[in-house]
Length: 352
Image (cartoon, rainbow, N blue to C red; front, side, top):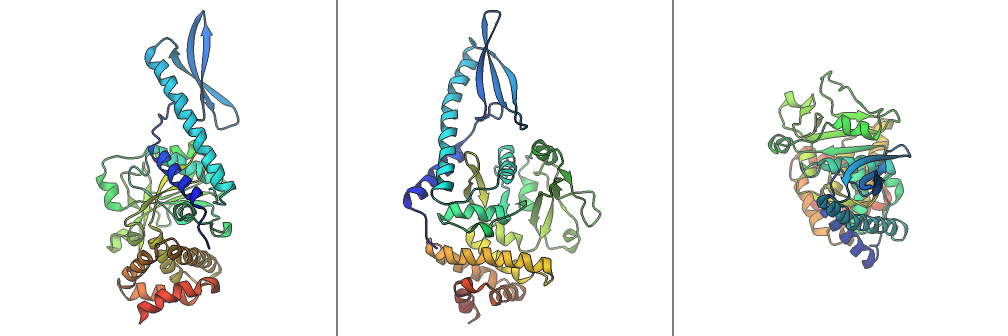
């Protein structure tokens, strides 16, 4: 495994910064355009933008001789130019550098959540969609088989959700804006709260949070004030995964600035989860995917200068107790042959 050329890594850094700085008003997205229309001898500005169904939607803006509106139209020209440049960056990174973009629907989902404020409110993209972002973050090519997914997983620390005193717009409304077939998924406990949403095609958006320890909190979705009416499933080991997250870029559209787990913690977390999977057919398939992602990162991280941080993350997990050690050792014993050396080398040091 090798890093992509320095030119492409520099392009990733530039794209990430410009996407993070993107503060366009939602009223005038760069996918649209201002259109002058003359009515009774006077010029007015309208704004045309895609309606999501292959057509255009037109909205009245105001008279062209209004100085504030004229200034906004001029500003938009620069924003539009930057948007087009960033789209070219994404195209170059996927076509020439070999980095893999998110599938279109996943990209639309994450982009909608990002613009609604998910990452501002300290939400964290986890799961396979986050794994896709490590390609750009580390500047490496990842095999497409390791990043195929039909869902998006979001995490937020329980205490943070209660303390930020702000919230997303209603999650179900946001998702229905992308696909009206989205519905809340009933929780297995019978709770009226829902932590997951699914459309008719089976695409699932799920919210997860840290486990607060007490048994009464572990069986039902946690109330999350910042998540726009969505609850979140408490999971063990989640606190380890989402501590000290990093910012990266999702290669979709003109680039979506996202927050993801530290890749060292992600790699170790995947080992832990793989070591605790059920041995039935469904569990084995998920374990294989966990082990592949962990193995790829255990190979890539030392090559990209993250070897010491990976060792530190592994030791932190190892020192947390017998259940953690057992899960890590169990996963290491079943690691795929091509990644066996990278993983066992570090686990072997801890075991001795």
